[in-house]
Image: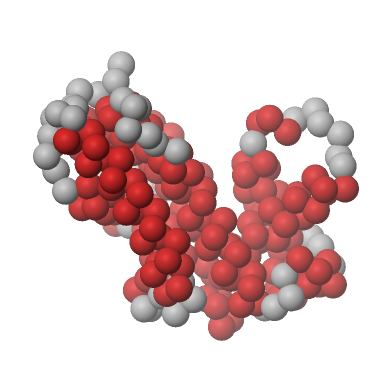
Length: 229
């Protein structure tokens, strides 16, 4: 698969199935170009790091003129920051809307399975995030202190309400979020190790299905919950 076709594939996944058959509108074209640029940026930053990646190389990977890329992102730092905003929103979207009245087992199971699927579809995203954190989060520190801290506290409050109502075992909600993040992203970040241990050349979708079943069962049992059917 060529670099451009990879970027197109990732951008297509981001766009979702609901866009098929729609006529392109100016706003949609801008959105589509932005998706292609960020998909290409993920590949380029993952391969060459922040210092090694260039706007020109990202433009070539996205199949767009450099001037078009600069129209959306005036410099590499802005693009890098936008890429992580996109990655984090994609990871956490399904758990952002949880409410005290929701079923804990269904909400947690959906979050776990979605995160495993993200590791399957977007492994580069997970590795980029891991590299950024290992390096001390120079570009994400403000996000971690503000948006992410607020997001975790908000989700923890909802889970604490489930615990207080006796609908879930008394676990530490923040540690539970850390556990789900780390265990689901492990399949992307440590792909080489897993494949070597399991004597596989590459992942198959059933590997992720099995991992999702295992993690959902273990984590939910630890929370005193049964896996949804």
